[in-house]
Length: 306
Ligand code: UGA
Ligand code: MN
Image (cartoon, rainbow, N blue to C red; front, side, top):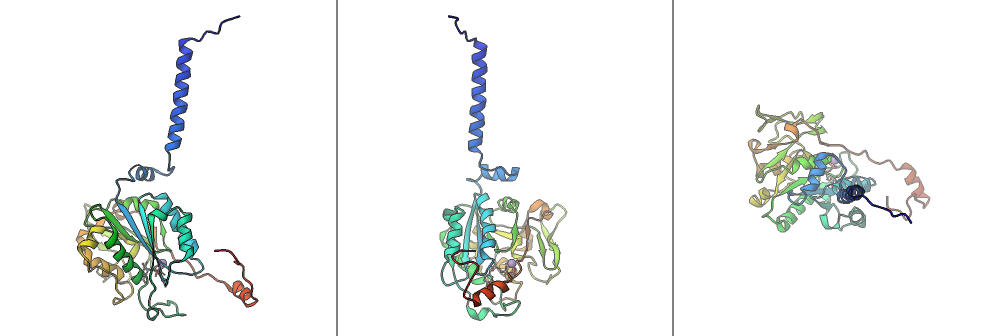
């Protein structure tokens, strides 16, 4: 019988192959995000980044689930976000609860509700509003935040409409907001312009003006999606709330005037040169065929949640 001799070199090669396989398995197991560098960095630093509380007013209409599904997938990608979703309704809905569960966001979300008083809506007109939207809902979220957030830890508040389009990169930028400050950046497709943006000083550290074409005389002529706020400012300024007493388009100025000045704004998004959020609006869903079905006592979505 011939004897099989194993040489030390072969043993060494085997050990190296084994170690390489082990390293590959380990790396794959640890990988939670395959996105670009800024997203990988966010994952690596998730425990130390400030929590971003995103406040979204929302109301029942045919495209609601589509809009909220889009947003929920952003939240799935971003580990340090907490979603405060405030329904414009007398009760929270199974649609929103189910959506949060389906996205695995139960522990990173808060579901609230408050109905806008009917006197603030003009039904059947376009625009069907005489007063600003989302006021009641955002104020309820602010009360929740003031009562529930651990103020020893730095965190950030962002007012997030349910129909805009947001890049994950915006949230990486928002994480840079310092305590006591309000971060600002450009917003695409708003106010009759391709982009509304702040103008910066030569050293790019201060906001010195804005390019708004619509009501440029506003104290802060920017859209709701153009800024996020360090939570400590809301604690230090308990009077800061949204109000029905101001004209449409003045909500942003109304909240910001209590919290900051133009000079103290913190420019972000590559010195306000990158567009990372767009003020998109979804067209009203046309349901003429559905209405015809309903007249015959039928419907296309029987037993389904659309
Ligand atoms: C613009 C701004 O982007 C909003 O942040 C601001 O609240 C609004 O103007 C205003 O000042 O009225 P716009 O696209 O015109 O937004 O408004 P919507 O997107 O229709 O509404 C803003 C938010 O309020 C949305 O998240 C929407 O779901 C919610 N909303 C709207 C309600 O909760 N109830 C409603 O009846 C209508
Ligand atoms: Mn909108």
